[in-house]
Length: 214
Length: 244
Image (cartoon, rainbow over all chains, first blue to last red; front, top):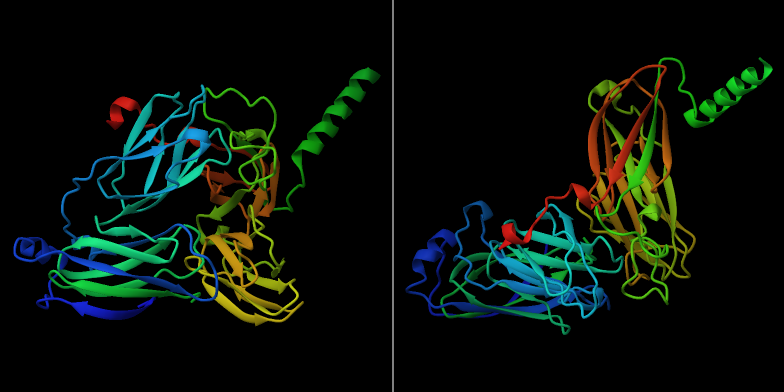
């Protein structure tokens, strides 16, 4: 286990030691739980642009609910991606909207292993959509404007959260069962946390994540 | 007749200048022309305004454009395809100073797997110097003022190095799988000399733009020419119809 975990409290009705595959079948009879906590790091280094997400214990065997979320919109006004960091689930699409109020074209692209694409140039009022089919970070750039960058973080499951400025996170609607809590930092200053947990039906699990240099 | 002789001599001089260093007997050489190209169809910017990695400067504004004739931080390396085309010894140690408060805005150096990196503390107090980059994580704790610590590169790829005194990345190194690696910029010609003849992958890498990889064959006593082009045009295109 790379990250150390402090499980501060567990409230639940029953202990379910099931795999992610079994979880799906059990969803009808169990209630979703929530997982929350705080990110604790060495020193006074501020945290910025960080994601906490859940992964199945065996990602190759993972079965998660089909993506029902609508496409996320990423705007480009002022030659800035907004939001600068967006989270989507594998299978979900992002609509990249050129909402400049002047005749300024953008050319959004990514060379990320999780998704390589080139949207071509398009003017204000138009958009292009991309479906993200592999988990991982997708760094966005514009081939024209040098300061324009952003990130789409593609989570392997729908259970993810941006870390707030106060270093807390909260993931709702988690099916009972075994999961692995993971972190991702845009500016990676610490080793990512990888913490196995068991979410109980209708429970609230507090998982504080300590990040270290090694 | 005399004029013709002078012209031929002048041509030989020009050819000689272009060829770069000649390889030793039985070895090969390679000249690599580095090109960065903008998206096809994009009009050139009204003025050169810097590159992806130029530190932010007041007055540029958010609509500053990338000048592809100035793109730098392009890594080029040769990776042998057989044991005969693999370097037999690691290069000497790479030394770099970690200055307090200084942030890295590009590749500060290229190294190779197996090479020793010496990190010197240029600050005014002792500090840890560390990295959490995949395959190259390390921590050298309490490096004294003007002192140094070292580690050996274990894995190819980008190495981001932090120090306790730095709020952002202090140093970025790119580790190649081979010691035949150079850092170049658009418009430059890189010379690789005294390379064992044989088959290689000629690879280019840039932090943002897609790089390239191609097979080349180098022959003894000959300097080959190659061109690498980085840019977005090689990426899969997403059109409006296909995407929706």
